[in-house]
Image (cartoon, rainbow, N blue to C red):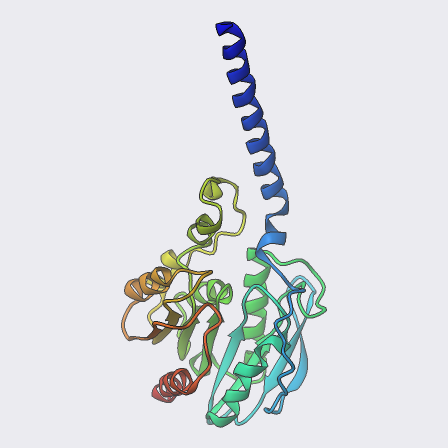
Length: 272
């Protein structure tokens, strides 16, 4: 009887290990499908109120990226390079972009590879290339680094910190930043060794130390996707000069209300 019980326990444990290992294998294979969501649509019919030009930006690996470019005055105003998050099309950011029409700023927002009809598949290395290609495209118009503000939204903060390292850009805006993708993933998969199987790690907490330009960090304490403590830690690790816009009510999709727009505009004006 004892032998049967022992065999049952061993078989049960072995079965659990097989299931767990199978889950790890599936997560490893399909992890980028869980991280990147190009087809997710949060577009609620917002009408674009700011004039944009649709442009094509070619990367070094010959992928054409769709971009929206707003040229108000390249000589006299700074230019925002907007790097969006892990889900949706450019249209999903219209409610934010519309506020830029009332600011003394130009902007370029790009869609990542695999997003908004672009070719290719998203990856950490690929998105770094997309961001750097956008910088080069602006440079080709005569926009120098000192006149570019890098703006990262959620996942986009990972690309923003990468390309801002040791560079003399005008400034850096991080909206709902995470410390690293490994730590962020642990919130959703606490029993998975994500540090071992994760391909795209986006180590913001390490790279922020290599950035010396003015930084604005924006985050809400009610964020259910990227915990607020991560944004606070990124801010604490950042070098001066640094500024924060923290709220007690904002979730991951921060409310572009009068207070946020004022904080953002004040930061931009301080860079001129």
